[in-house]
Length: 84
Image (cartoon, rainbow, N blue to C red; front, top):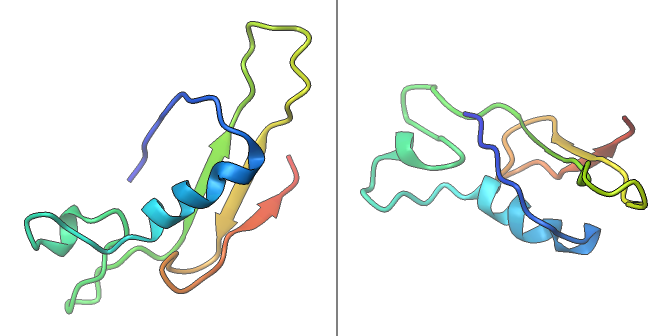
């Protein structure tokens, strides 16, 4: 699953995105419609990542890209920063 969202966020606010990507909640009860998929058939999310890119509109923008990766199911594996 891939999502692209354009937002202005500080580095400290990525916790909310991690919480969303870890969610196994599904409004309709179907695990295949959750962000983090877990089924009894062995089909599941096995890793997760997100990338935050600074705005390209401002040359004065000092923000650096952020790449966070969970090497395993994100509901049971923490996200780590990767240098890019």
